[in-house]
Image 1 (tube, helix red, strand yellow):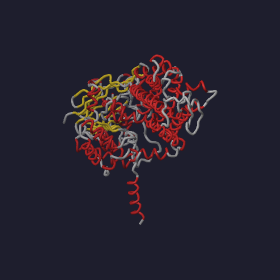
Image 2 (cartoon, one colour):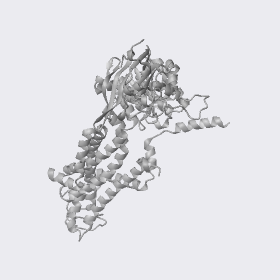
Image 3 (cartoon, chains in turn brown, red):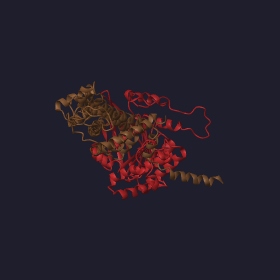
Image 4 (spheres, rainbow over the protein chains, first blue to last red):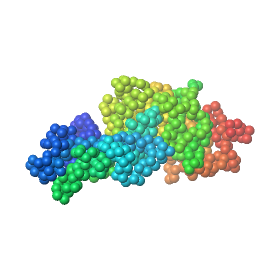
Length: 298
Length: 330
């Protein structure tokens, strides 16, 4: 009498077992509390970056000579700077610059690095050697030094900072993707796809690129943190955003003269940079725990 | 009889290592007729799989290269074709099934997507039509829940089901030639029988020629019309399947057939051929099988044996059947 019910059960189970990769991902990502918190923070930051100018309590560019270097208070949540501008408003508006610079630099680096890595790993031979040796050359410079050199060459400005940060991201992406590609192209299904007449571009795009995705996603989040630091660093050195811009690195830089007397001018943008970079790294760690199959079941 | 779908002549394929050319296939000859199943048997390392890869020209990422010979497929020489021309043939006119059904499907793509990829590529169908065609193909290979399965991922299917999907994919464009590289080795025996039966059925419906690569002589006896026996990158014997099992000519074939355990034999130790296939770097002079052959004569160690036509359907490369005056095709 049990057999009909078991048959029914298995049928019911089968229809319920609709597989969704995103649901699966979300189920494990939910458990990563720190990463979840960090993603909420970054989510808020992105919203703020978009609507910043509309919610900022003060005009970030308007000097107020009645309130120079005031400490944090109810009217100025993060205090004011040397021109009496509201630091909190400047941080909010500056979030857009920091995020835009780091996102665009990392994504440009991602695209270029991924293409180079895929080509390098898939085709091998001399093309692989050329790409990888060029990457080695770029690797041999310290990241920031390379970025300084590039900006020095191109001239200061936000766009050039993006290019500089992109250029030093490219070799890391290329190397990562090349490794994943070397792994992926050994799969029988790659050969099977070729045996079905798929072109190289098709094989690369449909069968090999998806294999590199999980590593890429982790690396991108980590890399955005690095890019924010680098962009702020360049601005701090006067090579990035122009001095009146509410960029976080610029704020650090212009505030450092008042470090002894009104430290909040430096501490506030410092905290903003610190929290944002930390959040991106935490997300990266969380994603790695979820996406890396080697540590998945721990 | 009817015309040949595939004719491989003097095929030589080599790999390069440390700038040295190592020849793996050393003159392979055989032909397949329309709607025929040709078995390609031999030990591991005898060059069976490389023969199939040479026919498909799937050398990407390796140093493999065809150095000599021709592969005529539907009258055209594949070795003289451009990569893009061959790509149009692959999957459409000739397709391949691999040994490992567990890994030959991309785990991150749904079954339907992978099937439709091949269909859209070659048949130039609209999305709806190709989905319909994919479902039809899955039904043809005996998958009842075809409508559901196209939305499932490979890990949700068993090995036998996955091999069915692979066959459906390979047969999707009704190829003239299907190369099956040990299609049932990774499957258990009951599923093996079903898959073989399925291949036979599809062959009869579509008149597809099948090159069945296997080292399972049971499968050969069950499936094949003719058999080509390979050893160390050469064809040593070619025969009709009944003739081959009734009276194997080449000592290597005799050894292979003798090594199959028979039900009722109460043996402690199974028969085997001593030794291993020689490595391509140090091939013996003369007949490549001579060092392992129990009927070897002095001439075997000195000179390669000629290919002797024993009858119209049989060929064998062995000194046992060649007198000095029969030395025609050497």
